[in-house]
Length: 114
Image 1 (cartoon, rainbow, N blue to C red):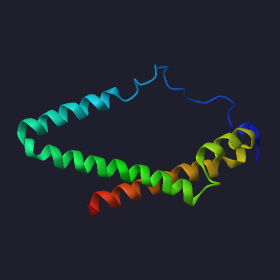
Image 2 (image 1 turned 45 degrees about the horizontal axis):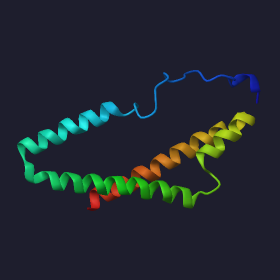
Image 3 (image 1 turned 60 degrees about the vertical axis):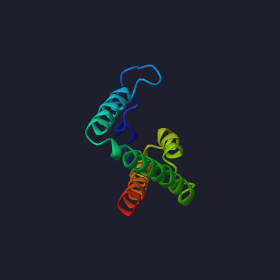
Image 4 (image 1 turned 120 degrees about the vertical axis):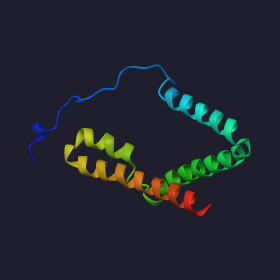
């Protein structure tokens, strides 16, 4: 495979932001929705917090499940190797998709089962 196919510089670099500013929009949306739930049906706040904690716990469990099931297929290690060996780009992409599917399956299972 021709190594000149792979660019040496990333095609896209995200804008420079300070630490902690990345998800403030989502935090604001969540706060507004929680306020709406509190205003419309305050008895549902405990249920909402319970469900949120279950889904969050499922995401953490899914992440650690992926790490324990595939100790040698971690996306961050494959990314480092991809910079040296560009032919491993497909393995890197597969590892990222695998982790996303495992975490999503754990979150879906927890959300449907609880």
